[in-house]
Structure formats: structure tokens, C-alpha cells
Length: 245
Picture 1 (cartoon, rainbow, N blue to C red):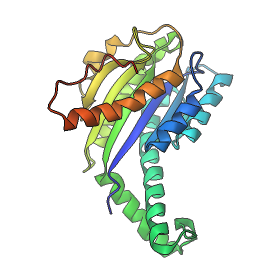
Picture 2 (cartoon, rainbow, N blue to C red):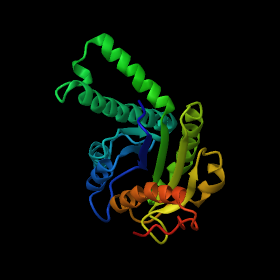
Picture 3 (cartoon, rainbow, N blue to C red):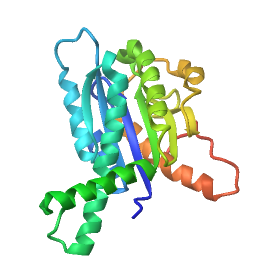
């Protein structure tokens, strides 16, 4: 059994969008195309109340079939790893359930199996989690309110890359910020199996401006298809900085 390539968008933000289409609607569209949308809402370490806008974090993740988490910036590194792996397991459970229904009938799901069988299937899910290829588009909110959190984001993404290196399956990451200077998103780091070079490129993440989360998610969706086109073509690579659509 092989689940193929797991595709995720990992959105890191600290509040609500204020320009463009509803990001939850865009996340649902991404999910329909086999892309899981995970969202981490980042609070200031001295923040005692969660801003009203962070309800959007959960809405996007639910619509995107992914995982959401609200976290203080000091715990961000651990949370990024947890959310990424939890979303992988959740996606694979859905895949296995679909396979089961095709074998056992539409009314049979993993939850209805006896504990021993369910345990065996979870072992399959864990194995797929280690062997399936993983592609992640990291989408970083770099609006003005994120200014003091960007260094923590950089460290968290580096730790994510290191934590996934032990997997058998191939990892591919790319990082975009939003808003971009010319488009809704702007390339920070092109597709790479590791995020070791993040320290060199992360100074590009200057904060400021509006928060077009919906348009940014839509643009992020297209990076998977662009990657596939580049892999299958001998033509000149796309200019990934030009993310207009």
C-alpha cells in the first residue's frame, strides 16, 4: 500500500486576514485537490488573551482538512513539528479508511474494527508516515504584527527540517512570505530537501503591510503544480518570484 506524496501547506500567522477572499473557502478548495492546510496561530509570550481573529486559524484548518494550534512563540518549534506529523497521520488515516471501504464495503471504517485489527492498521499508517514522500509549502505571515516573531519562526522551521530528516520518505520544502512586494506571496526559499540554508534567506522576511491570507493560500496551492511541471519539463524553470495567477 502506498499513499503517494503527502502535500501540505503550513500557514504561520498571528491574526486575521484583512484583504481578499475568505481563506477558509480557499483552504477547502486546496483540500479538494489533495492538499492539507495546517495553521499555527502565534501569540506573544506575554499575551494573556487570544485575539478574536485567531478563530480564523481553526476555521482555515477545518476547511483545509488539516490541524490547527494556537501557541506562544516560545513553544513554536515543538508545535510546528507536532502539527506537521499529526497532519500526516490524519491524512494517512483517511487514505487507509478509503482503502478499507473499497475492500470491506462503504459502511466499514477503521473505528468499527476490533482493537487488534485497528492496531495493525495503525502500524500500517505509521509505516506510511515514515516512507511516504512529503511536500510542504510553508506560508509565513510577515505583516507588521509578526515583526518580533520572525526569528522564532526561522528557528522552528529549521528544527522541523532536522526532525524529519530521519524519515525514509523524501522531504521537500519551500517557503513563501505574504504579503509580497509585488504579488500576494513572495519566494523566500525554493523547493529543497532541507532547510539548512534558511539562515541565509530569512533576513528577506521584512515585516509590514496588510494580511491577504486568502489570496496567499490560493497562490501557495499553485506551487505544487508548478513543481510538477518543472519536474516533467525540459523547458526553462518558472520564475518562482513571479507568483501572479
